[in-house]
Image (tube, rainbow, N blue to C red; front, top):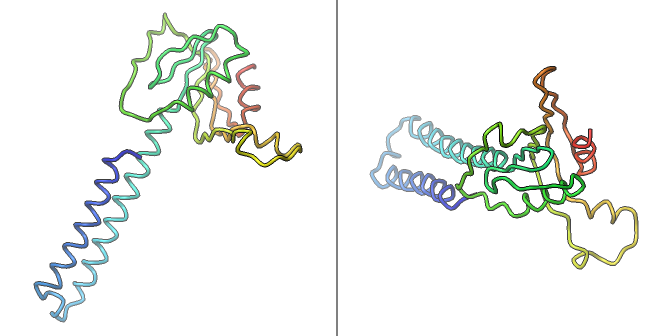
Length: 183
């Protein structure tokens, strides 16, 4: 998350603590009224909802930034722009390098015109975690280790078909994604 999200969350918590301090300092807690407790509970619920909303909005924003549009000869990402991929065999490696290099800042490249960039697939990545490097792993020679070398990559692919309608398919491994993009 960005620093301003943490600032807003911290301000909400600090404001709640300050108002609770004022409640007791001004002596409102000495009045026999259950409204004190209700107001306090409502305030903390509001704080929790604000924090949950900020986290959800940030996760959605990052998911949108991870979206990659795939054409036969290029890729487009809103943070990176258009990236040429003349060889379809390199497509997955280029997509991984784009996802690994994302900074999730607020820069935004404009989508190219339809005449210049006609995409066939939209890859929406829900989660992406790069594979562990070989030097970071224990020295094990097993099939399980080879599976761990793949990144954790989940999401959905939308195949664009203006005539028959778009087809959306979920994937949970890079191999599934590669098979969907090859179809």
